[in-house]
Length: 122
Image 1: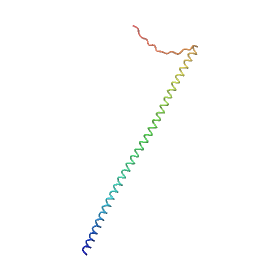
Image 2: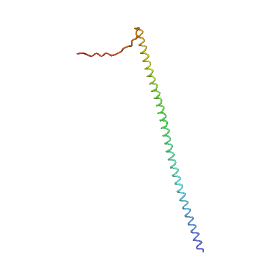
Image 3: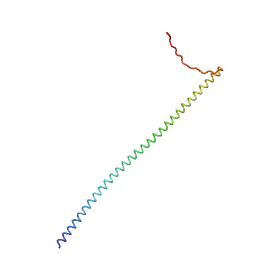
Image 4: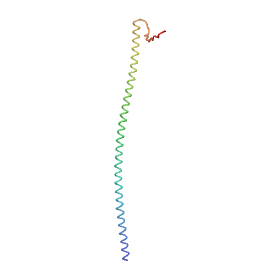
């Protein structure tokens, strides 16, 4: 009986030692995994910050480009308006010139302008 009791105690002691060894290995493995996870999380956080910075730079560049496009469109509109104004002024000056000719001759006649090219006749 004594031998069986000692065998049972030895068996329980061995099981206890195996359980403790397993628990230690498990804790070490869990700690390693947590360390790896923290490391990966830091790397990913760094990547997220880098991407966010790039995104902000691109958004700023896009906003600046939109402002430049808007300024160019405004400049083009102003140039087109100036062309229209010049055209109107040119027509007004032509009309005034016609009126001046009419006032000098007391007859209505348009100002004729043409280019005479002389051809040599052989």
